[in-house]
Image (tube, rainbow, N blue to C red; front, top):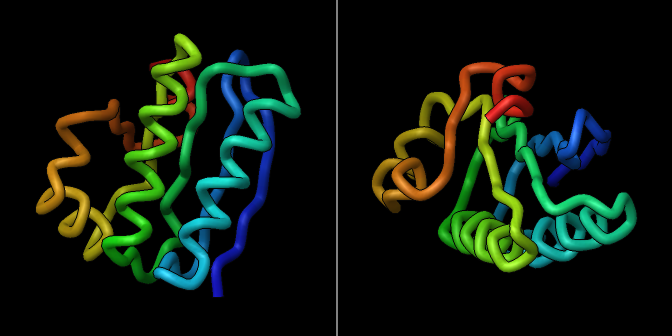
Length: 111
């Protein structure tokens, strides 16, 4: 089960993602991120992955699509809380080379 908590920090929308991000709910993450950007009139998105227990290839794809969406808006996607097996999956998919990554939410908002 995936959990999503939202907020706004500075010029970015923050989505804290928790639990399992898999093929069943990855499309929800993508749609939710897009909706939050539109709802708050922002161009940049921070995904806090610190409480993600599992990230499937579908979850990696959702992150990539959100990153492309923010770029199309003239903003950016930043990641934080990328540790353990989630970090390994992101490294294997080379996502960490595509988007700024920070150790904390506060630093990610400033990227």
